[in-house]
Image (cartoon, rainbow, N blue to C red; front, side, top):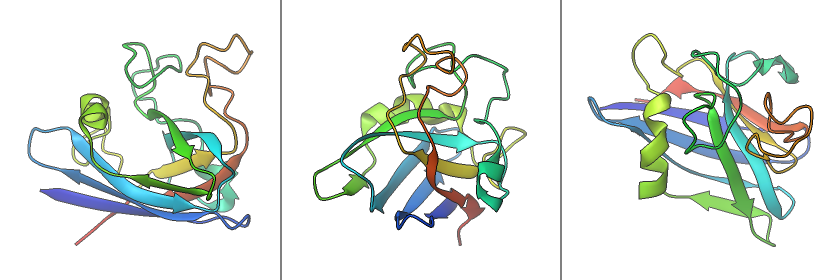
Length: 158
């Protein structure tokens, strides 16, 4: 089993910890929690670069090794890093536990091999991801998910 973790932080008080685990030849499982967000939907993606020298802006675009358009996690045509939205309650907190829906699409973010997400970044956005269906000029590239409110580099965990 391979394990990884991303510790999220921001200058806006958003923080969290996201855990990734992968058994041999199995999808990657994601668990974790995020706090400090405004209630509602927030885009949640794996970005291509594990670079935070300029905050979350230097994490680059969504992780997209197959050069596809942005989409929903269940879409055939989507970036590998398109993980959809997290839903934050009125208390500003989100808790994510492994569930079968996530297991379906996380085969696109392996922890080993040429398309490994180790060394890349997790980014939480300020607005909902329209899943490529919003009709905005940014829908097919970013989901028009707004600014990057928190991020963390995905690193191996012991």
